[in-house]
Image 1: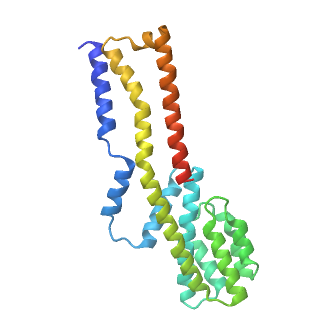
Image 2 (image 1 turned 90 degrees about the vertical axis):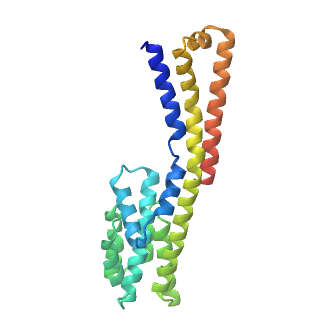
Image 3 (image 1 turned 135 degrees about the vertical axis):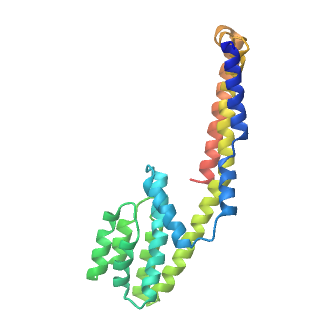
Length: 241
């Protein structure tokens, strides 16, 4: 078989693979519809371990901190419901949670053990990205100290709010996965078109780089492709910062 036929077959196979492969949104929807009845704490702990074992990026690190904050609020609520004091409950809840950086919470443990300023320690330990849960927990602790409110009820409400926000972020990411995948596929299609034209001995590179109409088509196509990718990325970033 001549090389041109091999190249045409390879290009056709790549195009078919791009069109038939399920998108990330479809995969996410299948997981949501077929997930088992696993307890929430176990599911969140599994997600947290997956994030900790994968290469860390700023987005993944923030996601790991959010999941750890939810688990901390749930563990603290469970400890408080047994009748322990807030300081003792916090000292027992923090070691039970797998944080991305456990050393950051050592001042919080010291403040809870020695009766120090726990809200200030929590705000200091909260990272800039993903530390919303720790800041909410610090606010609940401050309200419990000043107004005498039940800390267990406050932490339980914070855990529910954080879980709702986490589900909302996952839904937004799932809805944006389709447009992002489509944009990437459309960006690759011109390359596949060039390969198929080369396989048919049409010499597309000679036309694109060797003539004025070809240079105009190349410049216009590249500019439109770049603008489409930039616009799609801008829309997705606005919807999911």
